Image 1 (tube, rainbow, N blue to C red):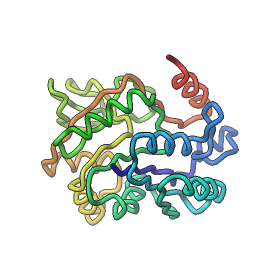
Image 2: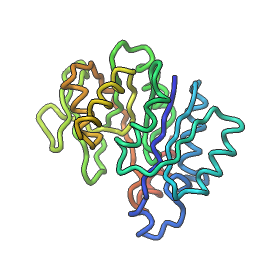
Image 3: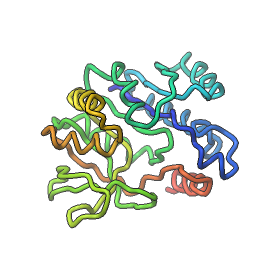
Image 4: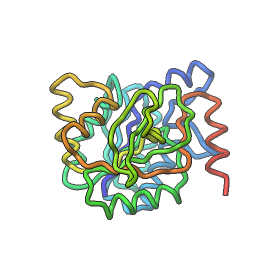
Length: 232
């Protein structure tokens, strides 16, 4: 399976709170965020790891070039206005089968992620999205599901059928890239609107619940994430 990491954001909130490293290099228990993801993906038989960073990250680029000596990494360096544009830039590298995409600051436990990947690999759905009942996000995207965990909708506010929020881990097939291209052509520019379009286009999406997923949006999230991944 192919993997992808979106790491082209500016990390302005972290910088404003005194974090000196660019977000991909923020260490969790001594390991940079982007290195942690690359190593996890490699342990799960990554066919390739496709990464986009912005043009203001020479230190991140240097690390990726060094890691590419021992990992199959493709690097795109480009400034983008958001995650959906970043995914679009990676799309040509992701065609030809299933892929799993995440943002660089999405923190999960590897054992739970392995179960998610197995479910996705064995699924005949167009996509399996990681969701979580743990809400620690300023603007969560609520995910509606039925009793079989089929995704019925994506919402900005909680709904009667939305027990989970999006975890920022997207397991998708090539059909999703066709929807992505259509969204870009129509001026649909946010990831949550892209996900809604997947439903509108009739793609079959399944939700897979992880107990907890943490995003590194603020300096205080770093310690929470370190504690989370260290817990047994």
